[in-house]
Image (tube, rainbow, N blue to C red):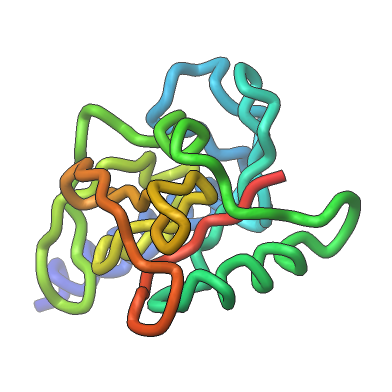
Length: 165
């Protein structure tokens, strides 16, 4: 018994040290090493060095209408220029062709987005873009399967939003 407790306490210390290291040092994304400016777990946004776009890191606008997504993005960044919904082309720049799996709402799901740079990206609904298909629909992109689909901007149309500026 005594040996088990000793190993358990060593394991707890190792986990604590690892957690401290993850919090204390800047994170690096799964993307190419020079894709994003340095960021850490507390960073609210991340800047793409290639496109020069600044993305909100947290996808806090889930299951919202197109109008609500547009309004939410205007206030998504607490400083500087207002945010907006990205175009479909801009959304595709953060689409990861090499998916990973993670648990979402108790189920293992596939996600096509960098898990480090864009943590908390629900894959339940496609993500709104500002790119019109018709006068009543816009393109939306699923980070679950890469499918691009037209979604109604009026009543009944629902999606997730990731804001950019």
